[in-house]
Image 1 (cartoon, helix red, strand yellow):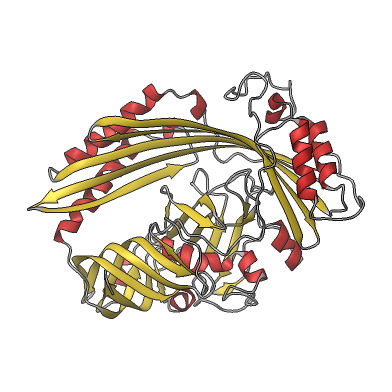
Image 2 (cartoon, one colour; image 1 turned 45 degrees about the horizontal axis):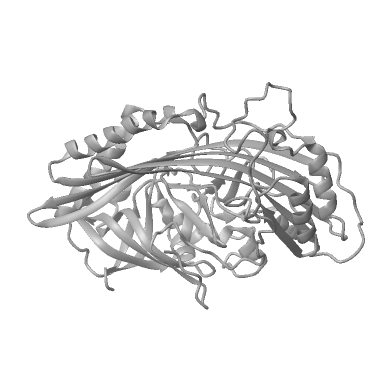
Length: 523
């Protein structure tokens, strides 16, 4: 379970992607918790003929007129800006353990979050009722952040054109559980058949269909339809009286078609292989060694130990080591890092952020120079620049804050084999698990699930149960070889911050870093 930051900013996490960042300055308040039933029922899909309504939320009675009046209420006490965020999300989950389907549920969420900004102060409130009475009451609560007479009126709403990076033919709301069960049954079969030492397999499949709308007092009106597919498989193996466990997860902004037989088999086999690999693993030598990070999932270190420090709110508040370093060198030449919302179908991709800004590709570090932070509306106004489309929120119950999307380092010119050959004695890190990170300073401890030793330029024995200890910004400065084998990991990870969880992607090519401290499980 995630824990709140300690006084020194260190966050302890049992799950490496369930990190909570700096405390939120805004408290969300449920004003009304009334019925969420729209006209025709809560789970009604959007079957209204094209052109019969203006937005998806018209079927819940929220037309442009109601939005305009709600925005006006938000400005009624002299605020500078008001915003309405609407969300209707339907989620399904089905799980199998020991060959039996033993868990399944559906969850439906509907509501509105209303934000009002006056100078540097923000008011935020939400409701689970889209009636005009509820929306106006919620807007009035958020508007209390200001105390004066109206200064501006909301502009007329005009819908913007939104790209679609994750269109699907059949929405998840139209996929019955009878089409999902064969998928998890096949995964269970593939995992068990991979190795006779696999004695237990747990599989779950989940999906989401989220419809969002953002309207604000500048006249912006933007909508998005966001599908999400997730599959997780965990294995337990037994060999000569010893048990080991591991797993794999896959996820995408996609529909049922994503789960092809090849994708399912690959996930199942990887989960089984990661488990049986551990039977022959030992502990790495304690001490300080050069580290080579394998491509893909090890990008979690980039995400956690470095990426969070480039989120603009930490820099605006002066708590990040990267504050005031725009235009300065923070990495060697050849190191370029992006935070990208435009990768088609990746878990962290978005068509628009949760402030209605179009997704974009943000260059954080270019050839070693810090070029940009990740900005939402508030930080962009502070720095007098445009938002980078990084304002994200878990749901209508939360205000947006700067968040990562898909964070990765671009390819270099080296071959991965060349990098391994360059190390006389070191550690090849393949898969991280839990750990702790100090967001401001970037100090980290990551638990290595498994890796390999490098001896005389060759990969040798498998190792496990090691702690890697270092400082993210300092490690970034020691990256001296970058390979051409970038992999972006899009598993079922969540990133936590300000009490909110968001789906993200991250990645790396093979890279060689300077020395890190390596210790055993109890070091």
